Length: 383
Ligand code: COA
Image (cartoon, rainbow, N blue to C red; front, side):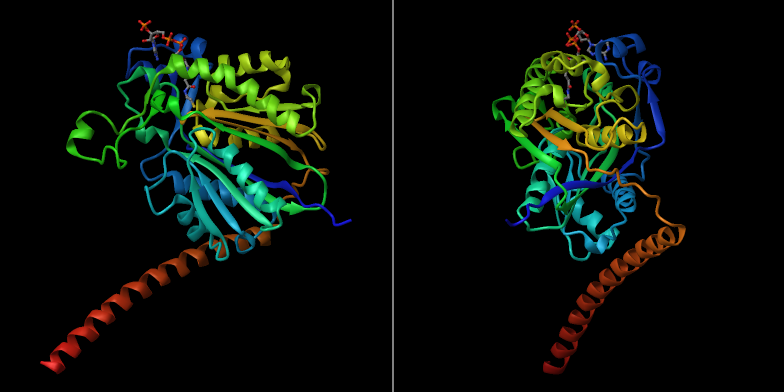
């Protein structure tokens, strides 16, 4: 019988900016309080990117960490998926900026937009490309610089979100386990409940769209809350069932970190005790696509994930969208620390990738310059 291919998670990495914005700091900017934010959301503080940091720079740091854990060189990557709602540019894709910085010469690269569900959508797509035998190594990144699209005068939104990045490396394996199932969903009729309306083809950026604040996130919090409390449990149940598991088989539930009350409602719906639920939103707020991979990394750091464990990752977000996946953690847990010479080699490799990228850019400029110069000489001779 031909052996099956599984998509195992073999690398993980995260990056969060060092700048911390507490609830008390926010209370100095908008009419809110630490007590209101804690009791309504569970959030205590969030991270804010420095001006020089962007979604791609944070993605690159998380990606390098994931590759280091797995001891996989960038040349072995087949595909890079960056899931984000706050790309560096509308195009080129942030994934291409990451591909260039890593020196992942063989990798395809694209961005995936599915609101805060993006990361689980990305895991679904990436794992299927591995299970079908197309690819060996797929890097899925969730990264956001949400502070750049916040209206810092709107207390309904600015207290909820934060910046950061996380990455998981999927690899083909014949060891059973890894990504066992996933479910993806959407209900576009709720698109206006959580929206960034400006800058696209409907409302191209103009002085008017800026004056109207269309470049900021707008949200109907109550409606999104209602949707989220209903869909999280439902999506998780579907993924658990599709994996042939029962709710009792779930060892750790890693939900999208948006609001502690939404997480508690989902756990209640699933009849899961809160000690089987991973929560870190008090430190980071809602980092959208980055929330699940950051939580995943911290669950590993805190030794909440053991070999053979069944994990369920579930998310909801703008679109409206939802997504869930069931994962069986590989046995044994792979995380030997890379030797110092290998780490040095990696650093040299990244400098080399930077150098090659600059060389290519210079070559293109010279090519254009030479084309123009040759045209001028031909024109001069003909004249
Ligand atoms: N500080 C103080 N008061 C605030 C506030 C803040 N930061 N934000 C809103 N309020 C006010 C509102 O203006 C409202 O006042 P009003 O009744 O005078 O109009 C009041 O608090 C209560 O608003 P309500 O919407 O009922 O609060 P809530 O308990 O539903 O909590 C959210 C609000 C936003 C925290 C909650 O609805 C939520 O988490 N929604 C989901 C959002 C989300 O997860 N989005 C991301 C999806 S990926």
